[in-house]
Length: 205
Image (tube, rainbow, N blue to C red; front, side, top):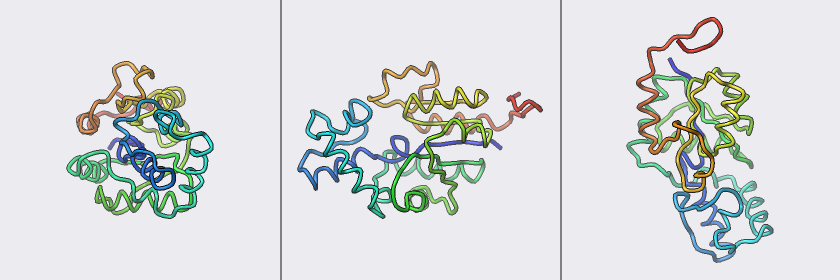
C-alpha cells in the first residue's frame, strides 16, 4: 500500500474561479478560472490589476468567515477522474493536505470530497508545512500545484516522489521530470507502483 498526499486547490478544485466569483459580487470584476490564471498569488488573483491589495485582503476576510466557500468551489477536473481519486482511497492511504484558512475549512473540504469523489471518510489535514507532513506519514507520492511546496517535500522527505501539477502560473518553478500534465497520469503512476517495499531505513526498494 502506498501513502499518497494530494493538494486541493489547483489540483482538484478551482479556487481561482471561486475567488473571482466572490470578487465579481463585491467589486464587479470579471470571473476566470484557475487554468487561465497567469501568475500565482495576489498578482494572479488581481489579473490586469483590477483588484488592489486592500481588495484582496478584504476578500480573504470574507472567505475566512464563510462556512460554505470551500465546499462550494467547482471542481477543476472532470467527474470521472474525481471518482478515480475516490477509488484510489480504497486501495491506498491517501491524505488531502491543504493550507485553507477559515471557519470549518476542514469540514467543508471533507464534504466536498464526499460529494465529488465519493469518499466516505476522507483524511484532510490543514497545514502549510507539507514537507513535515510528508515526512511524518512517510509519503510515497505527493502532488501539488506550487513549486515551493514540492521543493519543501523534496527537502524534508527525500524518499517521496514529489510531483508538480502543471499550470500556467507555475511555469517558472522548475521541478525537472516530475511535472504532471494530467491528474490521470499521476493516478496511473501511483497505481503502477503498488509492488515496491521499504527497507529498514525507510527507502523504497
